[in-house]
Length: 367
Ligand SMILES: NC(=O)c1ccc[n+]([C@@H]2O[C@H](COP(=O)([O-])OP(=O)(O)OC[C@H]3O[C@@H](n4cnc5c(N)ncnc54)[C@H](O)[C@@H]3O)[C@@H](O)[C@H]2O)c1
Image (cartoon, rainbow, N blue to C red):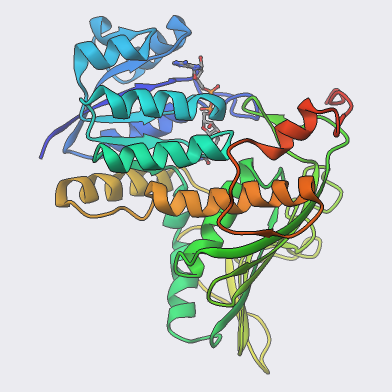
């Protein structure tokens, strides 16, 4: 079935990706271009020149370039909308698209929203209006991640006991992917409780939203599996920080590592396994943990689910499961105690602690 696609938040050209802008819309657009059922027909950005440059790049008609996304929805009535604006306005724009009544599917960038209430509302409203709402946790589509899950499901390390991750820039921005992968490995099981602590001494603002400098998080899933994670934006612990691995799966009979950190010059594979009583065995995979082509795969899967009426694995319910762990970790730091789930807050505990003056990070140093 053919689908018309529109993008909100084109970004400037992605020649110099970095913490102030990756122009993710260009990667979404490339994904739709690779999908013969999809035609990119319109774009909107509050910075008109950004939208115009994007339209130029992807052959979008001049009259379909907008500043206000609401006008775009009304004029174009796109089937699919990709939302690539900063996290603080994901919820507002996703809700606008959902409630417009003209959009069948939305693929929104991660993290879901900058408040837990916003993330919950998007999920509820998408379900109520029967709109397919997905979030771009594209790392699930890395072959290293898929192969790790296949090895786990094949019983190569026995029953899963613990998941671990290290996040280099914070449990919200980077950690959104990392928690999502933990949940994927643990079959989307809900969390039971979360215990966390953070340090926030120097401003660490990514895409307009605060992230802690360091965090340590312990959580337990309803099926008894434990999670342990650390973030470190200071660079002191190496790129992958405390656990020296992006994602580690610890089973009753062995360990799987996705994105292990090497010692010095040592070459490490993207994926390796250690069965009890053996050394590390590298596992060959087509790719590592990072790659823009994963977005093509994510979009292809979302479109397949839309046309076949299936629930996509990047769907809002799964994303909310990861988002609950993020906000529960910050909530645990606010309460100085364990947070039992479901999480019953609406706000962003890190932002609330800043607003209350309980946290006062120094301005970020010049690079
Ligand atoms: N999936 C990933 O691996 C990944 C990587 C980087 C960034 N991201 C996420 O992608 C999102 C966008 O980041 P980016 O790096 O592409 O940002 P960017 O700054 O490159 O682009 C965002 C664009 O949104 C526009 N915008 C802001 N408010 C708007 C509004 N109300 N209506 C229309 N346009 C508006 C801005 O003018 C800008 O052009 C963020 O949520 C970020 O966390 C995800």
